[in-house]
Amino acid sequence: MEETSNVPKLRFKYGDTWQSSKLHFLADIKTGNKDLKDNVKGGKYPFFVRSNHVERINSYSFDGEAILIPGDGNVGQIYHYIIGKFDFHQRVYKISDFDSNIMGKYIYYYFQKNFLKEALRNSVKATVDSLRLPTIKNFIINYPSIKEQEKIVKMLNNIEKKINLLYKQQDALNDFKKFCLQNLFEGKLRF
Image 1: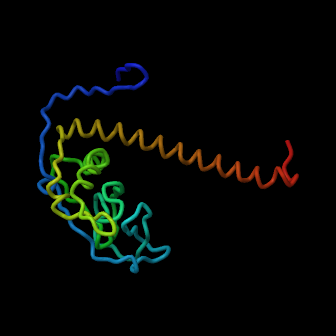
Image 2 (image 1 turned 180 degrees about the horizontal axis):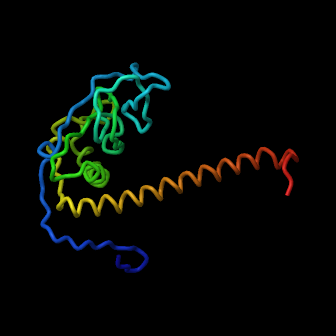
Image 3 (image 1 turned 90 degrees about the vertical axis):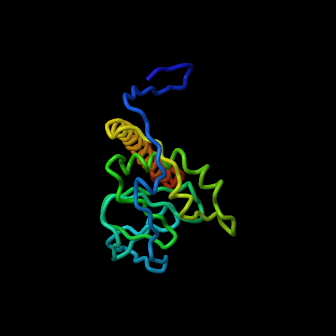
């Protein structure tokens, strides 16, 4: 990593040429067949709907690695990655069964960086933005060799872990502050 001013710049030494392909040549893309009313409080499996919040359900329609993207609402802004059993809403796109030349987690991160602009440019305007299958199928993915994808994914996974740890610390500090606010002004807590 080389630093100029205060902004770090990453430089990977890619030995391979990058490839480009439409997503539908690299993975299978389908929508679910469930509705929000199918969720079950405390259900056994994750149920991906059109929001950041993951509901629960007692059935699953897929078992494996997948990326899930809502087809309407906050298009291009919500991405879920999972390995395991789950079910998904009829307006959620499941990207799975990845080609041997591409990592699912690499596509997940690639979407986070590059898909919003494409989604908004091609969304159907109604009461909410809506994403159609051809936009996802024809989205161009640029990718290096599996070895280089592994390096990229490892680095981004480490950053994501650190972010999640900081969120947990922030939540703990907020809880402590609430505790102090509730007790300091009532004389229940003394220093």
